[in-house]
Image (cartoon, rainbow, N blue to C red):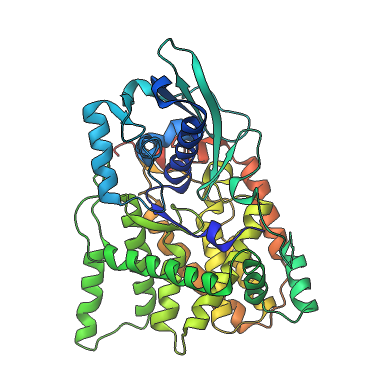
Length: 456
């Protein structure tokens, strides 16, 4: 089982695999190092990035994330504004704080190495952290893999989030098994997921956690539609959500709404979130940061634009989306570095489509149909961020993913749940397509738009 609270994690932008994962890995290394070694022995820490982390890490803020993790910050609690100041202090002072009483020399240029030649066999997102004593001897060395969505694995171990879990009442590995369990026990997909979550924590804690995730998502939209200015990085991309929101609201005040107005709002909601993500703001991995705008946009569409929307519907939305995201992660990937953007925006679209279908009262078969449609029409989508930044085409791509999710839910709800292609089949197709995809199209910024828009 993959918990709802592992798929949906509060953190900071711009990338779950390149920011959140490395920050967590650096934090884990720091904690173990301080447990095993006297801080006085530690003279230097060096971090080497491999594969996609090396190729696009600079644009994704991987170096900043590592500094924050080594300084003791965590993605779920760090304040984005404080984080920027801390990174600036480390760079300016060329010292890394290990404890309140102990800091060590640290140079970003020398102690964070971007190895552009080697790819580690465990995963294309790999980093090796090593601590040395004053004589250059290695005190501790660990290799970690950032496997997408903020999930991390230490070399030789299983995913940290799944290493120690209580037994759950309903184990499933495929969509077919999930539907069979639901039918055998007369459960909706959301009810089954809730029962599994309650094996890990009390019901009220689960519900409160869902409310917190929804609150952060909506708050991210609200910040995004107010913020103006230029996003960080060499692309000099201007924020658009605020201006789009103002233009859309202007004719509404004169009672001149367009028939497709709701979809325009959905576009703005998604763009607002991904602009916040690109700026390093607080977002929720859903299931990744690069795809963080799809589910919040569809959630707000349900809450603010669908008659009869309720808190129960929001809860059902998240629980159902969790089932779909879990199936995709277990049987394929949610990592752009492994399968391209079909595993990020494609999976987010599928999760959102399923969640919206459930919130609107769809049957289990209709939910599975909506999820299948969501992934099917993202198959083969590459991950080719210009300049290695999570901006172009990532921001607009989330808007399209959100609108597709609503359309997928609509098509499924108009049908009876029967369909020719199954969710399991499209997930397997996504896995195979990702395996066949050339590495230059998988979050390396060495192919696609990343090389065909040289003026950026």
